[in-house]
Image (cartoon, rainbow, N blue to C red; front, top):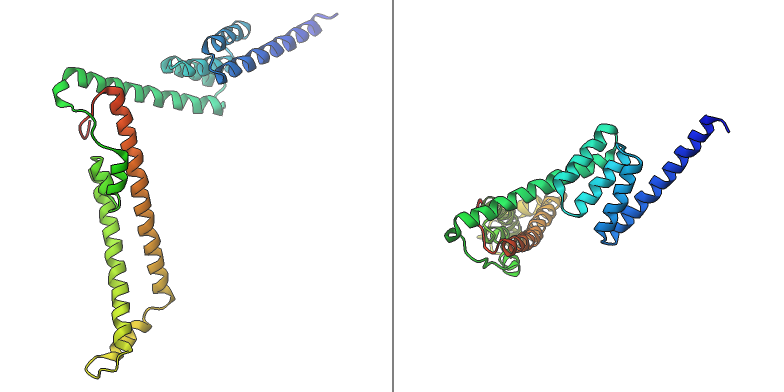
Length: 244
């Protein structure tokens, strides 16, 4: 058999073995068996070192075990080998975000250790945050998100004030226009009523939809943020003050 054919067969066999190891490693990750996944990944690395497939697989194993810095380096090497690897690029970005999140958490824990008297137990409740959002923005204020809360409250109040002004004006003008009291300016009232055409009613409907959207978002956002703060406080054992 010619040497070239032998080399081709060996390459095909190596690719088959590599594909099998990659599949088994990913299956082990999905089944929650990190040690087994690491073994398959190491075998794949020995079989085909410095390849984008192996580097990405090693990154996946490192991410699964919480070694985000190591994962970032594997994804970086995968991108160096294959710059157009969109999956590796996305995973690299995720690893960077995980590193930043972990770093912030460590910094906060160090703050607690250094100044334990500045912190108190977490006393806010996600249900209470949602309840306060019956008035849009109040739930955010409850969560100490003052800028967001005031913005939402201001937007909701402007919409509500405009809606009430328009609806009360129309209601009052309608009553006067239909009255028979000669001392009332029924003609002016009719002009006001006639001014409420399709455009005005469309604006009123859109304003109502916008107000309801702000109100619903305020409730859901306040509950979600408070729940996240509670989880973080449970991890740290304390509640961090605003802006920390």
